Amino acid sequence: MSAPFATDPDETRGRLIPEEESAFRSPFQRDRDRIIHSSAFRRLKHKTQVFVAHEGDYYRTRLTHSIEVAQVARTISGALGLNAELTEAVALAHDLGHTPFGHAGEDTLAALMAPYGGFDHNAQALRIVTMLERHYAGFDGLNLTWETLEGIAKHNGPVTGPLPYALAAYNARHDLELHTHAGAEAQVAAIADDIAYNNHDLHDGLRAGLFTDEDIAGLPIVRDCFAEVDRRYPGLDPKRRRHEALRRVFGEMVGDVIATSRARLADAAPADVAALRALGAPVIRFSPALWQDLQVIRAFLFARMYRAPTVNEMRAMVHEVVSDLFPFYLEEPQHLPDEWRADVARAPDRTALARLVSDYIAGMTDRFALQSHARLIGGAGPEHLPR
Image 1: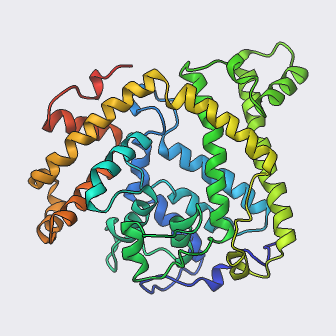
Image 2 (image 1 turned 60 degrees about the vertical axis):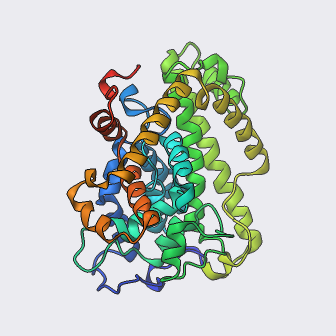
């Protein structure tokens, strides 16, 4: 049964370009399906989370991460009586705007784009779904519903101050009410992102040998989960022991969010989704105690994984690749693919051209960026990188 503050697909604010709706799919189901079938979603298969794609087939990519986020989000959404289709659509789209090479690639591209309006992966995701995907006869982008676009734009909270490039441009045409919090479904997608990466980064760091089971066994939450596994399954094979412990960590985070959010929603008692947006604070939260525990885990991961020497070595390589490709395409845009030529010809100034170059580089997969760098500028291709 849906909660009164769940987003009702029958009351959607609609699409920028009116369309006849499906007889057998809700508007939010169509949004989800369009996201899954988009080119940008498929490219997430070869975009990194922390480890560059060539480093191993078992590490998370942006695609597997997005699927994990959607799974967690649907679970929480269902438990709270929210609209699961909208939650899933926002979860699946939340990383569409990421560059190759994860946050290292984004940091470099943001620095290069600073004179031209900057770069932000949330804004880029909105630009992709409202403009850069060009498959439909009647419109550019995916023509998603207002609610899905709202979730993509502000699942992390209200957007205040000077608006990032894509948000400013689209919001002028289709007001997403960026000053308010998003509906509960988008808030669920955001916290599901936190749950997914906290859990799978522990998995991937262990698999990469950046730390050991013993290193993490003293961390909050993790400590109790290992202890429970050891009580229930003494002498368990180390790989199974690790898996059993970390799946319990996963469950602890999900359970905490559901319990905490239920209590907050009961206290606030919003009559509908508009009242929920007007609360002025997010309602989908971790408990304060678990949030503090997660800060300890994040500090550990930052020191032992995100800034590990091998990861830093790769960050330096990534910085060089993106730093070389951006000025190359900016000065010689004739090297962009044929389908980009018309946009290049219409670019009114250098800032517009830089945005097109940024769009192109941001859309690259890890491997394609490395191959392009080797072909156009020189240096080792992906097959020659350190492993």
